[in-house]
Every structure is written in C-alpha cells, then in structure tokens.
Image 1: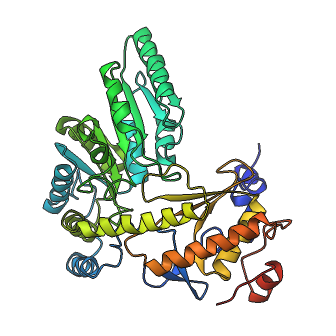
Image 2: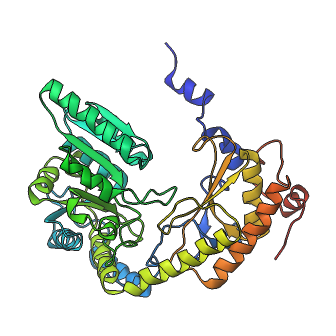
Image 3: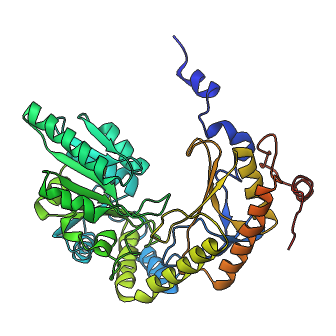
Amino acid sequence: MADIFEKLLKNSGPIGQHRERAHGYFAFPKLEGEIGSRMIFRGKEKIVWSLNNYLGLANHPEIRKVDAEAAKQFGMAYPMGARMMSGNSNQHEQLEKELAEFEMKEDAILMNFGYQGIMSAIDAICGRHDVIVYDAESHACIIDGLRLHPGHRYVFKHNDLEDCEKQLQRATALIEKQGAGGILLITEGVFGMAGDQGKLKEIATLKKQYDFRLMVDDAHGFGTLGKTGAGAGEEQGCQDEIDLYFSTFAKSMASIGAFMAGPKGIIDYIRYNIRSQIFAKSLPMPIVLGNLKRLEMLKTMPELKDKLWSNARKLQNGLKERGFDIGKTDSPVTPVYMTGGVEEATAMVMDLRENYHIFASIVVYPVIPKGHIIYRLIPSAAHTDADIEETLQAFTETKAKLDAGAYKVEAIPDMTDVSGKRFDYMLQTPRNK
C-alpha cells in the first residue's frame, strides 16, 4: 500500500510545481499598508489593480468607524453557535430583510462565505433525479457544487444561447425518460475573468419553452450594475425572472459573507437544509453590523458607483485606444489579452512591478491555454486619474518589450528573495523611479 502523502510530494499540481520560485511574489504575495489604489509590496509603493474593492469601501472612514465600534461592543465571538441553535440575532435577520428588499425578492439567507455558500445551496436544492444545466465558464465554487450533485449535469458553451437551449432539451428529455426530477440552470451575472455579463435576459426567455429554474451568481454585478446597484438582473431588466439570486460581500461591500435571495418558501427550505450554515458558527456581530452599514452606503451613495464606472471607462477606453485587446467586457472587470509563454509572463510581471511599480494579477497556463497571457485589472472608485495614466503608459511600454522578445527567458526566475541588481541584469531596459 502506498503512503497517501507520497503522491502529493511527487506531484505538487499545475500551480504548486512552481511554488519554490514563485511563493511570495507570483503566488501568495503580501500587500501591506492601508487598503487603496496604492499599497506597499516588498517595501515599495505600487499601483494596485488586483483588489475587488469596487466601491472603495474597504477603508472608508464611516465603515472603519462602524467596524471598530461593533468590535468594541460585541467582540468577534458573539453570537456563539450556529444560527439554528444559538447564533441568531435581530441584526442578522435585519440584514437578510434589507438584502431581500434591495434585490426585489421575498426573502434572503445569510451565508458565512460565498464559496461554501453556493456550493452548499446547490447541494441542498438538487437531488439525484434533478438535472443541472450550467455555463462552461462558471466560477470554481459552482463547479465544486456540481461535484456534490449526484444527478446529471449538462454544460453549455459560454454565453451560447443555441447550445444552452440544446442542453435544456437534453435535460428535459432525460427527466421525461426517468419520470422524476426538475432542471436548475446556473449562470453568472458577470464572469469574473472576462468581465462579460451573462445573457440573463435571453436565458430567461427560454422559460417560455422549457421548464427550469434560474440561479444567478452575481458576485461581480452586485453593487456595480443596475440603476440602484442591485446587479446584472436589474441592469438587463430581468430581475423578476431570476429565481435565486446569489452574491458575496467580498467585492462591492469589501467584507466577508454572502447571501441568496428568492421566494420565501424556497429560502426557508434552504435555511433549514443548507449544511454549510446549519453546522457552522454564525457570522460574528461586527461583520453583520459592518455589512448593514455597507449596504446602507451602497444604496444611498450612488456617487461611489458613478466614480467606479468613470474610472473603468477611462481605463478601458485608454487600453483600447492603445491597441490592446480587452475582449467583450461590459463590466468594470478589465481583462488584457496578450500572447506569450509562462516564462515571458513572469518576466513581464516582474518588470511591471519592479520598474513601473504596477501590481496587477496575471493568468497563464494551466488556467488558460498555453501561449496566452491575461492580465485582469480591477478598477475601483479609489483609483485616481494619475493611477490610470501611469498604468496605461506602463502597459504600452511593457507590451512593446513583449512583442520585441525582451522577456524571453528559459525558466521562471526564483523570486523568493529578489535583489534589484538581478532585475536590472535580467530586464534589458529597466526603468527606475
């Protein structure tokens, strides 16, 4: 019999294989200082485009005040226990009520975390005879929820209505054959990598032909889309057709937790059957009170969303004017598509961070196909015009270097302990500030 640990030591995984060279720089970097558009990385200030602090609430003075006062009054322990047993409060229920009203739904349930919450909700809703139809580019939390599902599941090509209908037909035929079960269609309000909105309105029209319920993960749309900030459903004019609306507090609200909103009877069913909440400690009171304040500001301060979109348009238009491919994004999420290998990508990231002082997240193989590079920039209300202009200039110069082959290296450099000299040697045209 083999030692189960042996295989883990021999195969660290597609990302883990680079850990000895990448840890602390390309993976698990440490951003320090006050949360904002500029933070400290390895002792130097960088313009940061990797935080989902869409509305700039993370360090807003009013938010900090409420968080601090709530922590002082309640500590992080109260209320103790799971909500079903001893961890409920008027404030938890108030937050649920306000979220439901904001999303134009009958009821809502709080969840400790978005990732575990939607996984567990899928598990609670769907039985072995039920069929799930889902978009191919759904977030990992949805995919992991599907792994828990004992029944059939059909995937449709990303935002492809024709293929979506084809999979609904397959699901319908299967249910008719087995004589039991129903269909849950899962998609996203905004796809976090490419920034394009899910085709919610078009999918909703398919309800006229097929019998299914629609669940939408709107983590990136909540607070950023729609007239009031209620999300992609409001933006597309089909919020009523979304049966279960899910979002997290980790993005626009810059907090912890999540919620799902929908018909009262269904939310009650989830409340009494969602294992990740029944068997987990309740959200601490300071987080609940902080989220109530964040929701209040989201509803009463539309200038925050306006500033976010002003910055997003400046960044996206600036990139397009300079010839960059940002795909089909129609949200603040701003992908920048380039070509090159993993080694070139790491060298380019190093140049951006060390010589241009730009901190941006990058995605390469195995997350995307070999030979492709995606930078994902997340503009926020906290960014300034100066942040945007410096970033556009940096991308223009580094893209020229990439195209000229300046980042050709044999392997990912060891970045666990960087020295300035090494950078200047490796990068042919360093630029110091």
